[in-house]
Image 1 (cartoon, rainbow over the protein chains, first blue to last red):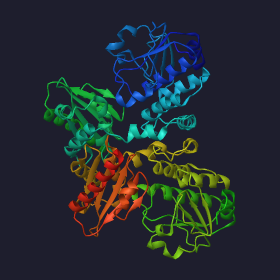
Image 2 (image 1 turned 180 degrees about the vertical axis):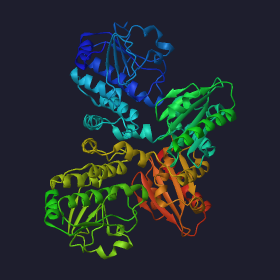
Image 3 (image 1 turned 90 degrees about the vertical axis):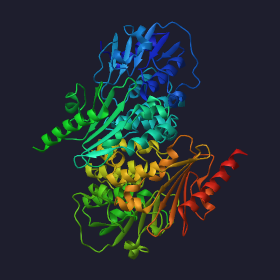
Image 4 (image 1 turned 30 degrees about the horizontal axis):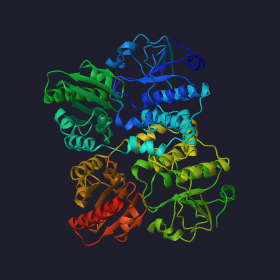
Amino acid sequence: MDITLHAAAQRLLEADHILILSHQSPDGDTLGCASALLRGLRQLGKQAGFRCSDAVPKKFEYLFAGLEEQASSPVFVVSVDIADQQLFGAGLAEYLERVDLCIDHHGTNSRFAKECYVEPGAAAACEIVFLLLQEMKVEITPEIADCLFTGLCTDTGCFRYGNVTPRTHRMAAELIERGAQAAEINRVMFDTKTRGRLEVERCALQGMSFHFDGQCAFMYIPRKLVDDFAVEEGELDGLAALPRQVEGVLAGVCVREKKDGSLKVSLRTNAPLNAARICEAFGGGGHNAAAGCAFQNCTIEEVKEKLLAEIQRHLEGCKS
Amino acid sequence: MDITLHAAAQRLLEADHILILSHQSPDGDTLGCASALLRGLRQLGKQAGFRCSDAVPKKFEYLFAGLEEQASSPVFVVSVDIADQQLFGAGLAEYLERVDLCIDHHGTNSRFAKECYVEPGAAAACEIVFLLLQEMKVEITPEIADCLFTGLCTDTGCFRYGNVTPRTHRMAAELIERGAQAAEINRVMFDTKTRGRLEVERCALQGMSFHFDGQCAFMYIPRKLVDDFAVEEGELDGLAALPRQVEGVLAGVCVREKKDGSLKVSLRTNAPLNAARICEAFGGGGHNAAAGCAFQNCTIEEVKEKLLAEIQRHLEGCKS
């Protein structure tokens, strides 16, 4: 059932022994939400804990600095930035049917919890948690401000994307006033690459090929490249965006070889090409500008040929 | 003489036949200021024109869309985002001693004009022009909002850097409300590379070398690379930032071979290394985190050897 922000705040104020859940492959928004809420609940004197199916990536560890574990059985379970039960991950299976409150900003939220507050217009779930904490009269400390700012900046590509609203910027302003170390967080999130990431990036760029008068850019990341440099999944964020960044490119393709040998395709398009339409031809899907599909038991040469043929068909369709 | 923002607005309200000057090698801030002010002055019924020593780069042409030339001899000259007379460029030599009002945000402004309004705390000169236009009761149209937003986002690396203040974010919020096409401007400024730029970048990355246990990253961009791909100066923005982005790097060096054969060094450092101190050893200078110097009649091998030796000396100095 959908409830108001005020009601969501009331539930949390009335509860104790609260467990906060983040989605698997956690990002800055789900972790920023979790830590901000955890800190807020403890500030109010409550017992509160946090769980995620995957470990907190190293670059987000600062979000949890100074927070000690509290051993208590959860009585009230709240999920943050989780759109669907598929995103719980194996480690949170026991909570699949036990979520009391779901706080989220995905329009596709499947309403898996007893009660939900979902605001699809929010650029980041951290925008909602900010409002929620204010509703709960939590003092926004510099630590909480850091957490919330992390969610805002990571989910918006540092205030770059179309999901940014005037409210997003006004919240950023307020969080900086409350002590968020904005420039340092931005530097870590947007101006820092691991050496492994750099190596993968330069090899991938080296092999990037252009087709159809530069309207399609194609990049391939073999498993060996990732293994050779011992690169973790999180270090590859944003790589799929590189091909479409090139001027004149309408279809930017990034193919990654996964551990099981399958080939995972990320397609980014500019109008008039529609990424979802192209990926649907291969059983995939997604959004107008970003979609994906996967191939089993195919060589990269076969996959490249199939994708390029489909992209060409769509490019020609746009002309007519 | 320094004057208040109110007085600066009064001067402009009292003037007519106003010429606005931007600095050479114009960027999004100086051009955003110029176009916003030009549009504001014309909205108030004034004759106003614009000049810059260099052509407006293609990616900034939208700032001047719909603005027609007005042929009139300037009676009042105002410079925007120009810190020093050296930045006028050859094309504006006739105005060197003729600037009535200087609007700027550089702490180093040399006060070359009759009257100056300089606010070093502003992240972009466009912040000041926004305040100025409001003071002059100019209506912030969507076109003006686009111009001002362009200055804000380009001078802050899309709200990433330490110069961003709460005011910067609040102004961005207001400009979006006034119709600024923020996401589209950000896409063009931060998510678009020319094909030539990509080619230079991938060659430069390919050749990037690491030294002193990864504490120094060294990149070289020979003239031939830039010539081969017919890359313009403006397309190389931000390349010098790449070496320092790699985790663990304290000194990121980018050396570019210029047309005259000289080698221009851009050095970016992280604390405790001081970029200005290192460049001073070669007659250069700059800031703590970003500095530069130049070498004449040297091979890249010689320059690399000299720079690495100096950097090593400073790295060892930090240890002790």
